[in-house]
Image 1 (tube, helix red, strand yellow):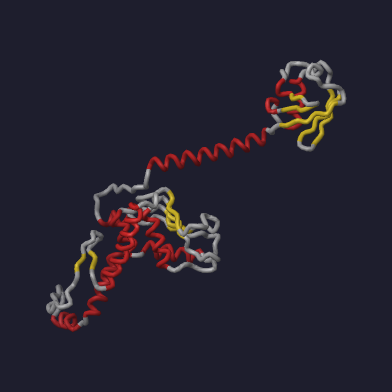
Image 2 (cartoon, helix red, strand yellow):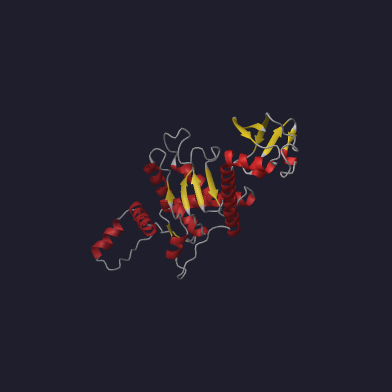
Amino acid sequence: MNLTVSHRGQSYPLSFLPDDTLAVLHARLEELTSTPAHLQKLLYKGKSSKSLDDQISLTQAGLKDGMKIQMLGTTTKELHGVKAVEDDKQKRERILRERALKGPTKLRSTGSSSSSSNELNYRFHKLVPLSHLPNPSSALDLLQRLSDDPAIRHVMQKHKFAVGVLTELAPHEHPELLGLNVNAGQEIKLRLRTDRYDGFRTYMEVRRVLCHELTHNVWGDHDNNFKELNSLLNREVADYEASVKTGTNVLGYSGEVYEPSGQDSCLQVVGGNESSAVSLLEDSLEDRRRRVLEAAERRLR
C-alpha cells in the first residue's frame, strides 16, 4: 500500500502492508517529522485518525493504495520552545508575586540607630543611566545631582524613603509616562530626556517627577492619600530650599530650624583672638548668611 503524507509543505511517499497498524504509520511519521505520535492528526477523505484506535490496521482505518494524507502536529523542538516560554513566564509571575507579598524594600541596620546609619539607608542605592542612549555620562550626572540634592535627601531622611535603583525610562517604555516606581521603591525610572532624545529636560521638571514617584513608595493609587503626601513632599522641598536661601540652619532632618537673628550685636569666638572677633563683627548680614549656607552644605555632604 503506497501512501503520500504531506506535512507543512513537504511530501513523504511511504509504503506499508495493508495489515500494518496505524501505530506503525504514526511511528514512521515521527521518525520523519519529529512530531510525537500522540500529537499527529491525519486527515484523509473527510476522516481523522484522532478518533481511531491506533492498533487497527490501515485497511480498517479506511486507507487505500495511492491515497494522499494531510498531517497536522507540533514537533518536539516546538514543544520544548513553548514549554521554555511558559516556564519563563511562570517564573516571572512567581517573582512578581513574591515581591508583592514582601512589600516595600526596607533596609535594616545592624548597629545602633543614628543619623549616620539613616543616611546610609534612606537614599538611592544605585544610579543606572541607559548606556545605549546618547551621552550616558550626562544622564549619570543628572541622576547624581538628583541623588545629592539636599532637599531630596532631606525628605527621604524625614519620611524614611529607600530606593534600590534610580535610572532612566527607555524610549519604548511607557511613552505616555514621565516616571515609574517599580514595586514601591525597588526601582524608580525617570524620563530624563526630551521627546526627540536630543537633549535633557530641565532639572526642576525632573525633580518634581521624582517627588511624585517617591510618593508611590507609600501609596500606589492616585487617591487623596497620594495627593496629600505628594503635595507635602513638594512643600517640604520648597521650604527646605527657602530656609537655606534665607540663612536658616536645618538641624538634622527633624524639621527643627534655628534662625539667626540679624540684630545680634555680640559674637563669641571660641579658640580665636580679639582681631578675629572684630572681623566677624564687621561682617555684613549677607556674609554671615553665606557662611551658614556653606556650613550647612558641608554637613550635608
